[in-house]
Length: 271
Image (cartoon, rainbow, N blue to C red; front, side, top):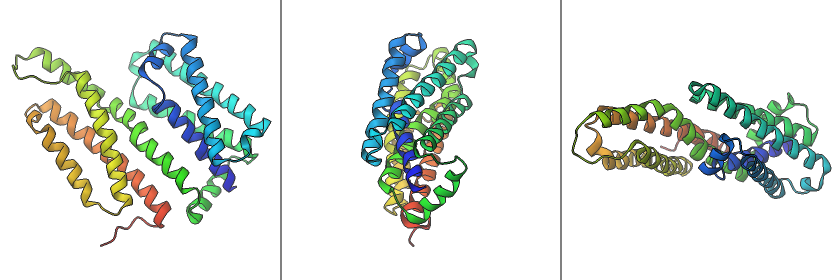
């Protein structure tokens, strides 16, 4: 049962690397344009990531024909889900929302669980009981650490961008209708800067919690606020900054709680 949980974590780590680290904006655009090369490259990346993750955390699994067939099937299903999402967003642009992103990622997670069960020949309902064993035994900590860090730092960043996208559009509309002579970032520049700052912010919060240093979180928020203070007179920007920052901190806190529970057995911080 423990091997099945390790397979789930390894395949999910491969999915996270495929979708949120190695998938460039150019690759996304190729898929949106319906170019087969975009899907082929994305599928190849997914397959290679799954092989590397299995080689590191599932010794001997890559030599199994069952593993190869399941991973190829998982890659094809992954591409099919991406294709359906892209077609839906084309036919209904309003469907490209945070909810659609969550549903898409949930579908990918289900297929990862299914693939791991096929590889290890484990009934899907038994995964819940196996996860409890993982919590008690504190095993596979490095793998779990990688999954949580990539999920919180990169994957949640996309969710936050979807949530704050309406605010970003509003900032762009307001900036075009005003005659404020002060130079401001364009919405695209602001979004990109927020993405990179968010990556670093969530990494620092997760690490601070693991090091039992919650006071560091306050310093991170203070430093970020000071850097953006001159722009707080714009109400739309202040709302965008506050919502984005709170969502970012909350996702990092959830990830930190999971890691503390796994590593230390509780979520209590030392006095």
